[in-house]
Image 1 (cartoon, helix red, strand yellow):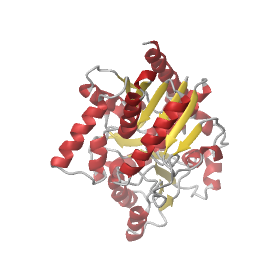
Image 2 (cartoon, one colour; image 1 turned 90 degrees about the vertical axis):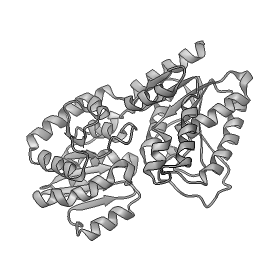
Image 3 (tube, one colour; image 1 turned 30 degrees about the horizontal axis):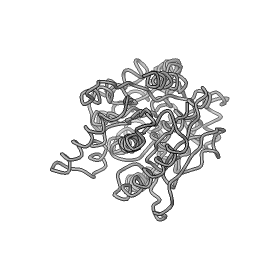
Length: 394
């Protein structure tokens, strides 16, 4: 089939949303689909990183000064999304896709508008929701209680009902979407991990040496956005608490934006105990994780997004420290230390306890590596392929 992917974001950038868009497209291409991605005017060329035949089409560079790559709302995105509607309409009219696959709430809305304009084409729309629009805006500080919050909550419920089918990246989010969809058609298509990325390394020690990491210390790693709604406000203050009880810990914080993390590390005099890696290239991530001993995902229950980073940690065979959420348990089973207290002290306690039992960490890491076999992008693509076929049959 011809699949037109709507990506209202500066694709490609090294973060979870983009990784899902890219890996879904690569896996769908592998089974024979023809993929076009409509996106913003900025973002890295994926041809530099991975062999593919994906056709990436960008909007006009009218907002040439807009260079924001990190997650989070911005009023200028309204203009970018208007330009993206024009681009998607052109591509849908000329390429005649079988499916429009709209990522995020903005992508679902854009896909719905174009589908309605070209109603005689009977294009099917799949709405791919990565999380809650309103919760994301609140977590980034763009919304507070009041009439504006109520407006966006109302708008989100409307968008949740768009599309011939809705898919989400987590079981939690699927449950929330089903509450609002009148047709109850919502499926979970999990994020995956490309295990081939992790098969090329000879040993953990070699990766530590390559990255110039201390070989005699326990490497505790967080990768991803260094922002509040990813749990960084729990993790940063937990680091000195953990170090106070175990001086053999060494922390890696890999991602962006780095200003607040750098400020914290300097203020706490943690330069010898923490390395900030920025920028974090997605295709360099496997070696960083291969050099690590323990991984952390500090997202709390306020975020219903899936955790692509957890799957990467599993692929690398790492034990994981995370908060006790149903989503995390369904991924990890016995491969994680679950922090029951959603607090800085609770997270620090988890780091201390797990790092103090290296035999247990190895057992948990092995379990995660085995479970990772069940979460490949190929499985996700097969599920998407079946969803597409069912829609076309109708």
